[in-house]
Image 1 (tube, rainbow, N blue to C red):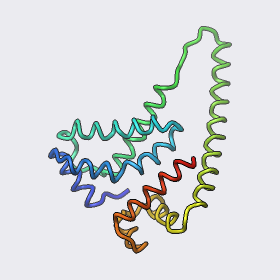
Image 2: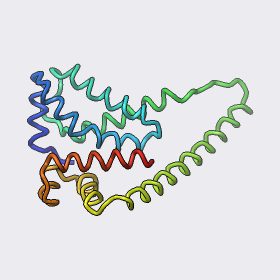
Image 3: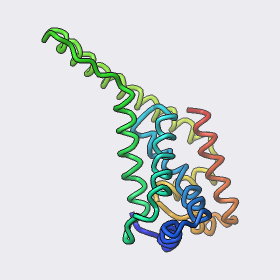
Image 4: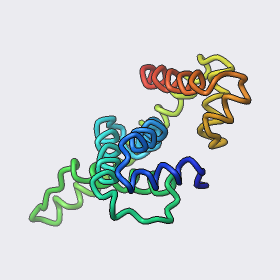
Amino acid sequence: MENTTSDILLWQQIKKGDITAFEKLYDSYADVLLTFALQYTNETSIAKDAIHDVFLDIYKYRSGLAENVNVKSYLFKITQRNVLKKHKATQKTFSLSTDYDSVILKELSFEDTLIEEENHQALNSRLAFAMEELTDKQRKALFYRFNEDKPYEEIASILDISIESCRTLIYRCLKELRKKL
């Protein structure tokens, strides 16, 4: 993942306390990070909380942020870490006294893993079906944004639309997909 010039500038401005730069960074990455976070949990609330914590910490500790950071990579790593930490915290762990009980727990854990895999496969098939219902332009915009990792400016140029229209198009696609899932 490459650092873009705009990310570097926003990062430097955030370090200086610029709220507008902070908002721009949040707007640029919130939806992408949510999609990314949902790969690690099925609970949207956990994903959203994790992302908000990432940005809260960035703002809270802005003066101590490192200078040379790959902003995109940093956001994805910290989001992943936060999601996994929050997901783990929500799962109840019980210590049981007998070996027999721990064997049962391990079996349930294995079953839970299988169920999660099945849920993940079902979600992927629903996503594929929902993607088919999108227009070609919508699919192309999502492909360029998430598979090719292109910035909104480049996507807008490819699709021959304004940058604002491009952002709106992608936002509405994601919103529609979330609704269908």
